[in-house]
Image (tube, rainbow, N blue to C red; front, side, top):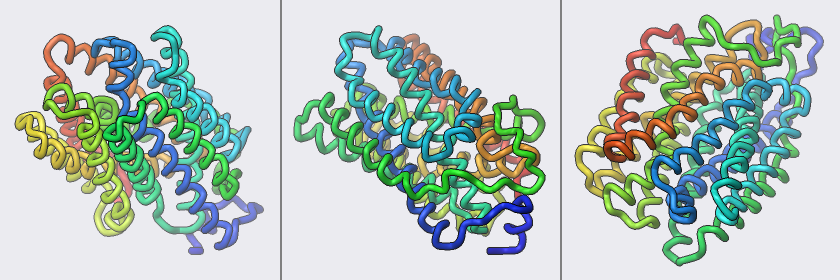
Length: 398
């Protein structure tokens, strides 16, 4: 462990040894993978939700908005919940609720029951997300090794696997309702079991008085980072929620093949994130953000102009690769802002970032219903262009 890492920890704190850190890295990697797998399965079956309840694009956006509303609302207390229950407690609670919610989503009697269930699903997913990102940044600080891009790569790999599995099960004509039931309960049980290796409690950093774990509206540099996360999450959220339906409805692909678009997007994102830590060590984070966002903008523009199945699948991969470094870089940058705990910093910038998930669903639904889903997906192009321009103005670590 480097002297810089030791100096960053408050006096009197006991540091985990190398073996304990290694065990924690494996455990948190499982958590990122589990969250990704659940997200991939959900994304692949958004068309199933639309068909099951006979929804229009506008009404479907309300389902997605409900999950986003729960996610954003929970961020006002997520940092404090993590501090009180510990990472392990939040992971276990979140995994259980998310698993049950996903298992039941296609079994509800009507939209009136789906909407509150999705609010709860989004709230616990958000708390889970904050807790494992806090664990990841703590491991990065304590070990002196860059791990955040690798962990987010594991999330994307899990999402690819979840979407690919659902594509295969759809081809085998297995009921979507039973697919989600099996995946929800199985993956959440795995997350519960593997959470035993997490650090749970993190040593305080030097200068942290231990009283700032609560939510604080971001200001200054945290606000700028939050706005960039907002832009990136808006684009990423549109891809997660609408990319399969776009391929099915606008490009004319069957749902099992359209689900491969989600897998293509997440698979490329995973590969890019696994190499992201090495790129962060070689290039400035500011340059990486600008270049990668530009790649996503160009790729998505080509997808929308072509309307061709093969071009769309390849283009989705480049969009995923371009969006890959955004969240790992910006979340890690937020935790370097002095005077705020890791969990509170992540919750604070996420409060703005997840607002992109709030704005995205109704915006896409409105444009799709008024014009077309193709026109609505151009939000991804706009968002990534703004992200590329904004990256140059932020004093991130070079």
